[in-house]
Amino acid sequence: MRSFKTEGIVIKRKNYYEADRIITIFSKRNGKIKVKASGVRRITSRRSPHIELLNYSVFSLHQGRNMPVLTEVESLENFSTLKKDLKRIAVAYHICELIDGLCAENQENLEIFNLLGKTLRKLSTQENLPLLSYDFEIELLRLLGFYKPTSSPLKINTQEIIEEILERKLKAKQILPLLS
Image (cartoon, rainbow, N blue to C red; front, side, top):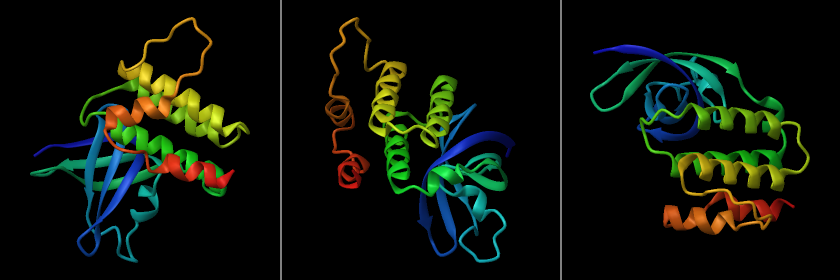
C-alpha cells in the first residue's frame, strides 16, 4: 500500500454509511479522484471542516483496496466570501457539476485545475455571474476538446452542448434563473 499527498478542491461529497463520506476532489496531480473519508461525520472529527464543498486543501491519502482513504487534511483556502452569497454558491455548484460530469477520473489536467481555482477566486468578487459562468463553460469545453473556438462573435448555447455530452439535464443550471 502506498501513501501520497495531493492538493485539490472538493467538488462533491456524499454520505456513506453512518459516519463516513465519499468526497470527489479535483486535484492538481491526479485529476478527479474519489476518496473515502472515514469518520468525518462524527461530531469529534477534526477533518470534517477541511473537506467541505469548494475547499482548496492538501490531502494526505493512503491507497485502499477500492479507493484512496483520507488520513490527514489541511485547508489552504475555503472561499468563505463566496459561500455567504446564494447566487454565487449556485454558480459554484454549477461549475462543480460540470467538472464532475465532464472530467474523467484519474486524468491529470493542470489547466482545468488552474481554471477551476481562478474561476472560484473571480466568483468571490465579480458582479457579472452569468458571463463568468459562460466563460468557464466555453474554456472547459475547449480544454476538454469538445469546442474549437472560431473567429465568429456569435454566442453558442453551451448548456445544450454540455447536456448532449452528459446525456442528461444539468441540475444546478435549472436553479440559476430562480435566483435572478
